[in-house]
Image 1 (tube, rainbow, N blue to C red):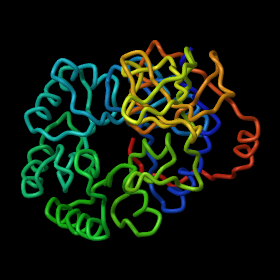
Image 2: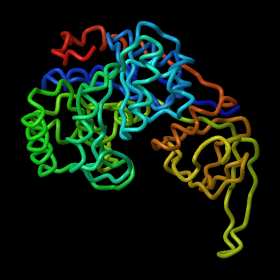
Image 3: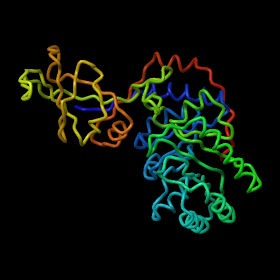
Image 4: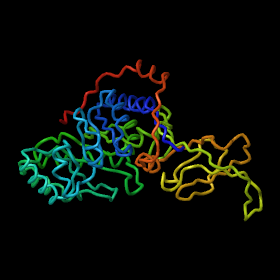
Length: 356
């Protein structure tokens, strides 16, 4: 039976390493958990490291986690019917539309709440955000809303376009933020500089006024998202997909007329993004898939039998797809050796930005 293998020890180790990196840079590390579909076991593993604030894009995941010990940043603008629940369940959200912000203010007033917002700036990704020349007008209007607490600016890279953040981006973002602060007359509390694609800049450059990053893919996949290359100090196989062999038969390639040994396993397009998975046995090739089956060329490896299992690595889209599939069994793995390393991994409490 197909299953998602979730190595809790490796996730905790990746998170611990990232905590250390962020601590050394005096930065706020905000885990983005949207790809894990509100998985409570993973969330509890992050809490065990002292993480008490996470970012999520889907309000229903936050509601299903139902953990009052956590605070949240909502990454995606809520639909109008979600605004009341957002104000009740979420401490801070990223916003881009004045009309939505006004509506949040009105609902928050009725609920007797005050809601924190970050204003997303469309820097160069082109997905969402306020255009730079409109930012001051937005801020000057927002700061007069009694039930909105404007806490800072957010930036994003490589969510829509493939342009990675550069040294020039860091320089210009800092100049832009400084200009905004001079105009409004006070220093912004949070400058959220981007996602996992900003990590190479964090490692090798001074990010200046940027004091928070939102990290999801690198946490769960252990890769540099600008190159998709492994980061040596992180695990790349914290979450994998495992499928069972249902059939093994000799087949003939109708184009080359060469024979090969084909296996069929019990995953398909309904279970994951097939184009974005790779067999961990590098001798195996993926031939194709249907909704329920994946066909593999075993390349003559005769040791495989019906009932054996084959593991696959997942890119971010495939990982997210599989985590959201309720029919895929989730298996949680604890590794005592990694846990021993974690126990001796001395990380002092980082000097965090006072957000909440």
